[in-house]
Length: 311
Image 1: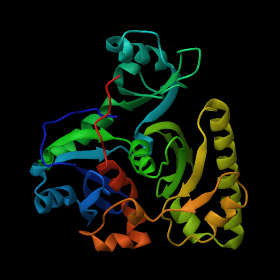
Image 2 (image 1 turned 90 degrees about the vertical axis):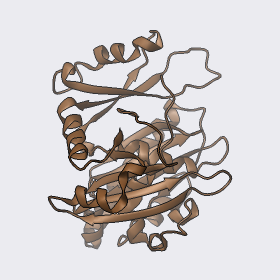
Image 3 (image 1 turned 180 degrees about the horizontal axis):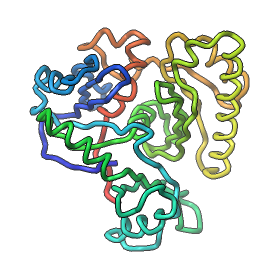
Image 4 (image 1 turned 30 degrees about the vertical axis):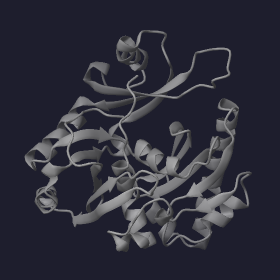
């Protein structure tokens, strides 16, 4: 998803993400036949001039910069792809989703993300994701970065950032489910051949999991497991041409037992993720810790961005 585009700067992307207690910024460069290299990953405490401080410290004018919307800032809708020429697609989608928004469609910024169909299916109809955000939210984000003199090229969403990491975990001709938790809640994505096929939100935060007593933890684990079962069953029915290799659990420090609980109740293998398996952290050794990986997970995924194919 790219709501804005900008000129070429240093290779790779600098992603700047707003955390509950500050900002996280990471620069990642993809390397041929090697792990993507993280040049730096830093956090800044919240404050009225946090973005300005970050801009000065990182000399941001050298980079292509992106940021992320919060989950509450946008809607991600699955709709049937209209049978129109490519140049008319967004207009057709705008008309199709107008009654799904809780504000007027003329006040929405809309992007689309294709969900590739089964190549062997007799019908060519398929679905796509329509991502809609209020124009006011987009303008406010732009204004923040303009005030800090940060050249914002892209406004992205967490689902696409997580997709970027998930694709690094894929094996040939098999899909991967990736589950993460942060202050906004849980996010399940399923990818195949580098494409996002499924996205589900879970209203349980990483803090709730970390602070739960044993009784409450079991309640949370049951809810998460039920959502995984329902989501993966739906995925199997909807995309029967894709075989899932595994469910991968993103770094979740302070929460013991979730991987084993899921593994005992799901039909797919469940693994825990160490981001050092897919990133080169040579320049940022502190990212070896699960705590830092969890803190920077979505930001690192956003910095993995590749330009999307135009629909």
